[in-house]
Length: 273
Image (cartoon, rainbow, N blue to C red; front, side):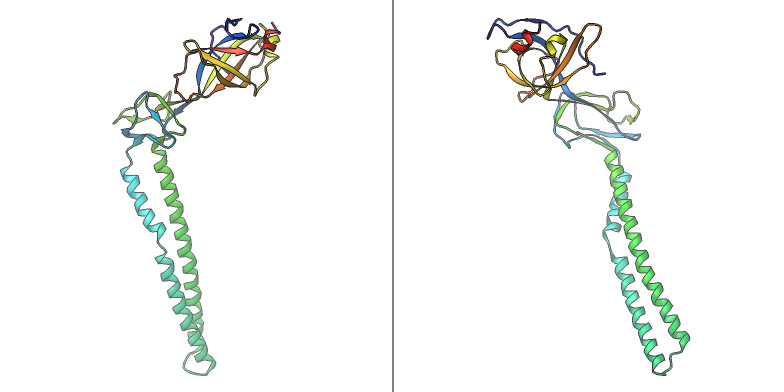
């Protein structure tokens, strides 16, 4: 079940604007809280961020020591990018084809080539043809190994999956990364958009609300109202016959989360009191 703040929502008649407007109190929350961690143990080589830093998607946050793995990838890149072995086997196959055809002509013309020599030339050609296939398979295997090594190196670093703010860093340079660490290595929060959570409205009031509806939100110390979209209505609490809901609000001015805001409810909600 979705967790909500424990603050009791306060409903009161608005003193500004239309008299029939109601105000509900809500609290802003990050729209995402991402606990990021390594998949395997390893020595922390570098921590690129600190708490409070703003990061963009793809930014490197923490790096494990990867010298040996990186060198292995360099070797695999060379091997996976070269087709010399295939080309050499093709040349050998074509040479064997020439020898086979020459033996066939000599045999057909009654010259010095014997049937045994021709049959040997045929087998050598067929073997050379199979070696071309083997060289192609080996190259495909090297490319798979390269991709696996690339994936391994990707697992040895933490990058930001979203634009956001670093809320907590739990590791330091020279420490051993622990995939089982509670809270992960880094906590990233997404503050744009912000969520606004409101609870404890009576069902008779929330019945007037619909997901997708736009409401207006204002910070306690500001006079400007901002639009916010209703994105979630909780299940009704049968004990109190109340319901909680969540709004999504743009946060281009990078307000921190956890602040109290006023939500202007439509007149139809006022009528549901």
